[in-house]
Image (cartoon, rainbow, N blue to C red; front, side):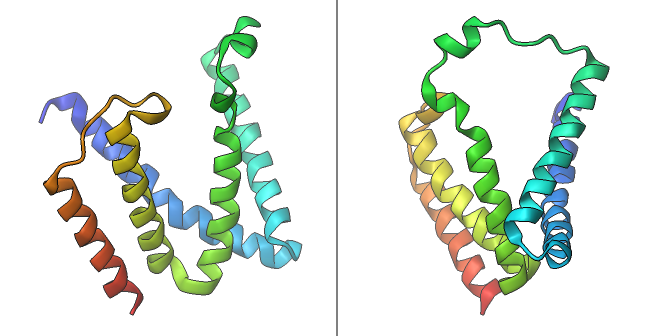
Length: 149
């Protein structure tokens, strides 16, 4: 493995570790706010402020006006998917726990990813479904069943 890939692997592992932490924090927040939706709104507000601070520190330029008119409509839906994910994780973590929540989410990610890659959807390069990918998805699905029951 090339040296710079280690940085990406570590970044992925750290990002993955934040998922159950975020869900747990947001779940506790929903207890205090009395609402899963309120907790998600506060979470997104805190995230927005954090990203704005990062953008200011990095001196990230604002997008050109053409970006808003030339981009296809669907590129603006990422935040909606993120909102669905955050609210769902707040609900799931309270009902099934951290391990099962992540097992379901990872299984869903893998199933969606194999379809997205196969058809080259949302800007991904096409990567045909193979028997190895199918077997991997089956193993992940079996793992989810074992984790849950």
